[in-house]
Image (cartoon, rainbow, N blue to C red; front, side, top):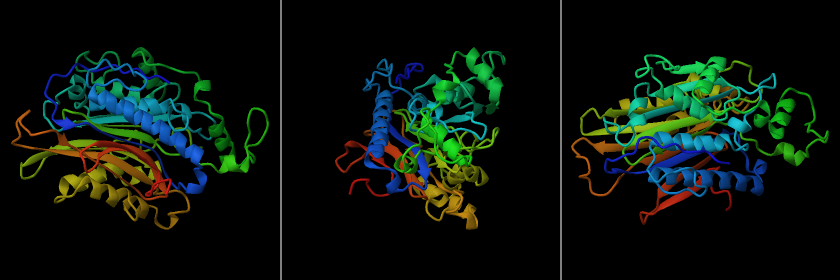
Length: 414
């Protein structure tokens, strides 16, 4: 699996932040009994591989598989899209190649990207500066584009300013269906036939959901009960990155809900529902703050409570509210998402999910390059169901950056 990284304009400003990454697979009613060790190890191996590759890109280092990095540090936008592109090619995740089927047996994929910067000039990337014109974009009902997240990136960057509206440039934040796919062809994005997106496990899942009995494979042999009961990632994938110049980007992608109605739009491409990124000056002008988030879970519930934007508003409008507290208030146990399900909680899947994010802050009086050492962002997450598949980097007590991967609140192996 190879995803080519095309770097943005080379950066020259002095680094001010230590890059950080967090990504998620799915979230919801995940039980240990449904993730046997061999399946857990697949999730772990994939996520840690993509985590390393993304962090290497941010640092301008060569990743494990090369990844096309030319040695120039990548921006948060480059890195978040890179990470999600990798997951879109990995069929264990519900996005891209591993997407679930609609009731009619088709794929309708969704993706989004959003950016913000702690520094007004968006140092380190011409693309990040340009992306802040729209701030965020989502694409919907995508069928054959290999990497929907890369299409969302193109929609974000093509605002029509330089080409007078030609070549699909516009200020539209949401585009869907055949029209945006036609733009994808014009813009040179890679397409794949329907067969590329077909996976047997997703098809079996689709058939079971339609109430047609035993699972089916091409040889006519039903799966074992053990295979049927294994967890299949239902949730959106996403990544939030902080680059060395203080830019934050969130990228998100999904196949949606198994057997969703054709034409259904979820939270993944909807601004403020399943993703958000924003920066602002503190009310007392003492600092500038920024955050980015990506959500996974029951998308209809995320839309109803405008989950990501609601969490951001708690931080922005509250008094000394951290992003960690805000994410817990929305997506943690007993939070707004869970309450939105009312008596249906635990019965229909409504309200279940989780949110990942990064927040960072820079003092208003800090001049470029004058701070001692690198500033650091804070990685956060919370969820209200059995688990959330996630991987991130965090600093230990000795100041060493460590990789972490977890599904449940406790380690998988105790």
